[in-house]
Length: 153
Image (cartoon, rainbow, N blue to C red; front, side, top):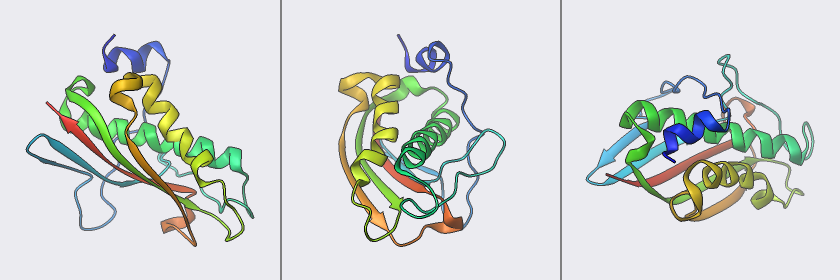
């Protein structure tokens, strides 16, 4: 099943592809590589999931925010590539978690993003190298930010 069809079969609702909030491109294609700038947990109504994990929100909120961030990245890929079927594989993900210094479950939060990509693209295409790190803050107090690199056709 194609990735575009998988979005429909899973009943996923993509937010609108995010517009740049600074001087950068949300998606830059160089050769057969697609670089996706940092995305936040954009909801379909245009709002963002906010809150610092460990003080304002819990780990489950962080997981859901990472998953929602994945939907925003997919929206950008779909808008920029025309079809998700052009994605050959995810190469590298950097997941940043807005959290207290005591919070140590960064990988469990970013699993929200990674689990989504595995569901949509499958084990071979949707699972790549990854880093998950904690941050003292993120823009607009968003809970999660993710950037990623893809190999494309």
